[in-house]
Length: 417
Image: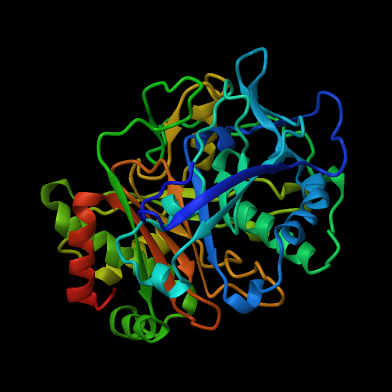
C-alpha cells in the first residue's frame, strides 16, 4: 500500500479498478519467458510531477475514461499471476483490471522536490507484492506514478505503457491492435553455457509471495549531473567523447567511489544493463529485452583511473542473457533469483522516453524511476534529466549505511549532489 513516510502528507487514499473495454477471451494466457521470470522479485516504480497548468481542470474521470481502450491493447496488464499444470508461472488474462490510486496531499511540488531524505517512491507509489496465490493482486497500479511488476516488461515497456495513456488522454488514436501479444515460446538455445551467469543470484525460495527477504535496510537517493559537469568530466577524463559516453563515465565514477567506501570488499565484478528498444518490434511492447552484461576489473578499483573503468564498461562487457535464460529454464522457472544488486548494477536508461508522458500538452517538470527488490550490492539507474536539461538523473539504491557516505564523497570529490 501507499506508505506515509511523510507523516500526514498523503491521506484520504482511495482505490478503484479499471478493466479493458472488451472481454479478452476465454482461457487466454500471457506466457512468461525465462527473462521475465528472472526478474519476478523486482518491481519498477515511476514518479511524475506535473505543474498546476498541466492538470488544471482534469477530473479523475477524464483520466480514467481513456484507460478502457488502452487496457484493451495492453490486456495482459489487467491479468493475474497463476501457475500452469507444470508449476510454471504465467499471466491469466482474466480482465481483473489495474488498480487506480487517488489521494490527497498537503505538500506543494516544490516541497516534495526539496525533501532530500524522504523516499518519494514509498510515499507516492503503491506497494503490492505479487504471487500466484494472491488472486486479488493487480500487476499495475497507476496514480500519475506507476507501480509496475517487472515480470511484465522492462523500463521501456513501463514508460511506453504510461506514455501511450497520456497520448490517449490527448485524443491520439491507439496505433496497435489486439494481436500485439503473440504467445511467447520458450527460448531455443544454440549454445551450451558452461559458466553460470554472475549477474543473477539464486535466493532462498519465496514460494508464492514474491518478495525478496532482506536483512539490510535499503535507501534511495537522486543525484543530478548537469550537462556542463558531464562535458567537463568527459573532456578532462576521457577526451571529447560523444554523449553516448556519458553512461560509462558516470558509472565508472560511482564504481570507483563505492569501491573506496567498501574497502577490502570493493566490487570487482559489476552488472551492466542496457536498453535494447531499438531492436524491439511492435509485437513486443511487453518485453524484458534489456541486454544484461558483466565486466570485471583486474586491479584494485578504488585506485583505478576513472577513464580505464569507463573503457571497461563501454567496451569489455560480456552479455549473459543466454546463460540467464538457460539457468532460469532449468527447472521451468520455479526457482527465485535477483538481478539488480546481485552484483553492483548499473542500468543505462539514457534513451528511455522518460518525459514522453504529457498532460494537456505539458511534460513533467520532474520524473524518475526506481527498482524494488534490489540486493545488498546495490544498483544505479542513469536516466535523462528534465526536458531540455541535457544532463542525467541518477537513482541510487544502496544499503542506508552506505548512502550518506556516497553522497558526501560524490559532493566533495566530484561536485555531484
